[in-house]
Picture 1: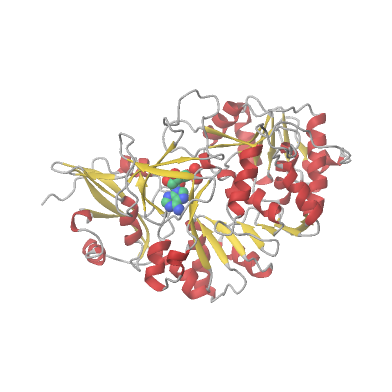
Picture 2 (picture 1 turned 120 degrees about the vertical axis):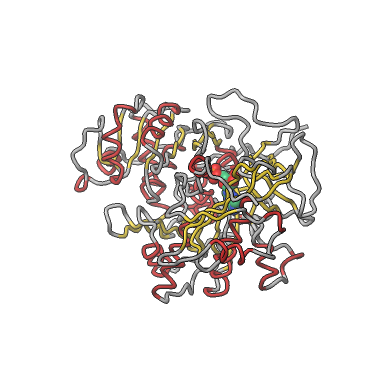
Length: 541
Ligand code: AMP
């Protein structure tokens, strides 16, 4: 027997409809790519998204067609998202920080038919346009006054393009399992893989993301997504913010410490989210200027592990609650958030920080298990680490144009991360399975060592890699970038770590470098570090 409730497909554009009806006047403020601050609201965003949909329809873009965006977080980019979604086409956010060859590869693989592009990226696109085989037209996200001369095919300014539409258009209607969005994994090895979200997965994921023990955003919040729309589905903020009706502040192209601080302060932002490197820059700015964060209540830190010192500074010096979060492109992307269950709610100081070093517990809609290499489940004791596997309605079951099986017999996806689970269901990443250091048959967590090393006051960034060892197979090498104008010796760094980890975890050596290589989404590029240090000889005792 089937239930007798209405059939109301979970379609993403219903979110902007809701925002326009219930929260129509709520401000959406952008630092525009052209420079000045621009203000609009959800009602206007919806009207202009309808124009985008109408224009795409007229340009022959159909259900299932891919439309690329190469753009910062702006109101125009958001309008494009909803306009593309509203006709059943697929937004494909391309990360502009990738190498041009990777961008070409991804766009060709996705067979994108059109591209919305910010002014910032015109020069690089013009140089590489010959490699973009499938794009029929470029829409430059600006107005006629700022539209430069360009050699890009059929290029038109966005404002002129949508001015040809009147918004007298109805969203198309289709099954909720229809593909909605596409994002390629940042892939540190091999070609990137296309993750294809559906309308249903995005809407369910937006509900999950908004829960009180997840991001807990409410209509009275002011949300600044520092995380770009092109990074892992913008951690759902392009959906969960209008869904909850919170006001939206978009940083455009300027993600440096002073620019972010200015927006946080001027627009009384209460909630923000981004990767640790951005927050490092903000903390440096605050320390330099003596700035305060009186309005900011919560900050989500994810994408890489949030260093203990960072969490502590935000909480103790600025009164901002840190929510450590973990996820991945394949998970839409949220997997877990470190909010406090009653078991931990009374903790303070170092004991609370110990818990906040964990990546947290999964919201409803994400199931987790840890297993050994043979797939046998491991205990949730907070100590045993194993492969982290996940299952849920917003987790990928296949990659785009790839028939490989990526789920185990029970339908779980292997995240490639290694983690512990504690008795209260809190997960802690100890490593990527590729990065874990295998010493004498035992595993050493590179992340734990890195977290410890960055706690040293002279250390700006740390990375730990396994280096070949004649007796133990691999031993940890600690690679360090010192803070500006600081000097430190190997012994000084190792003495700092002494007693805080098991003896056999101690790095065998420390290498000081000017810079640590990063991926396009700010993660340490360990493949390159390993390559750089492949002939490194550890001092053998
Ligand atoms: P991406 O798909 O680019 O978002 O990358 C996902 C990967 O980033 C995960 O599989 C983790 O290895 C890593 N990651 C994300 N968040 C965290 C975190 N809070 N701590 C440690 N690693 C993280």
